[in-house]
Length: 414
Image 1 (cartoon, rainbow, N blue to C red):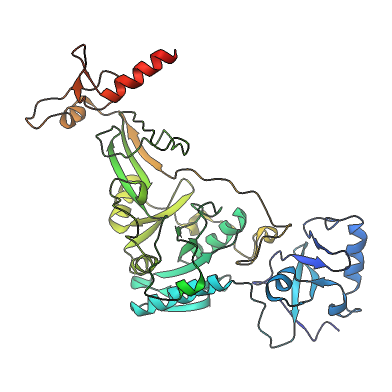
Image 2 (image 1 turned 45 degrees about the vertical axis):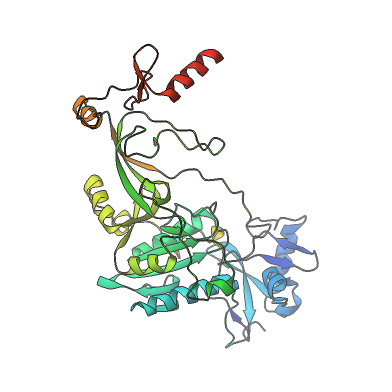
């Protein structure tokens, strides 16, 4: 009875949500009681239906297909490695159920077209070389670079993203994960870019630029002072409730900082998704991983990073579970709407500046910076901000007007 229908492949078999019509609710397949009263007995009944009751009459359907495509798609239960899953049923020869939104499809089509227009072959829904993963867009770049473009518009679990990224790295694939949500749990967890959330009709028009707003980093180094080359002290986190607050420690730092937060940033809209993909395929932008955080660096900054941090550890040497050996309980299909079973709280992300090196500068270094146009030394501010003074105070001592005010305010508060 079940042999005339085709089941999901292992690649398509995720922890799908499943709706039980008689109870009018989703079942939680990660729990032995299915998340409802007398669930153990219900599970036993459902499993006994296999081979006896037609799938269409078992009362299990896909809630996503019902809500998005207004279709009643029956599902069945099965075990894989002692884990319970729900699989779609379809007739032999039918295409697998697609859960991609129109915006997701538009991004894949746009990137594939743009890549081919710039001389790089691109394939949509292409399997990886090891057969363990399927890339949304595979781009064949220069010098044997294989770029995998992965637009991610829905929420997924951290474990699932790490598993999928590890499989791609073992296959020598440079992944570009594209997020529209600045608070997506994958931001920084994988090599990523962040682009605005645009409708499919806008994305498909190639002359419409898609700006890259995050994911690209640069290396900054120098003295941490108001007149130094460091934008903000990496040890003083950005306070969104006080965005004009500044603070410097006077030490010398080398940091990785998002380019839009660096001194070299000159405005928005300078880098588009098309330009980024083409440069990444050409090897002009390189992914990095530092202390578990990922991003992209221009190739000249990448060379500086390697000089400062030594050889990069290869994932083949580091090891790790493959995508088929991962915990499927925490994986979900692209662009599925959040269900009551898969939903999880999101955490607001702060700054992503990463410190590569820090030290206290010697007097020679400070002296080289603190000179005026005539070459005469400029004394440091007496209030200890670490920057050269801008004026002489009422007592004739070097200071900044703002530092004096801050010191007076602190004394009044005390």
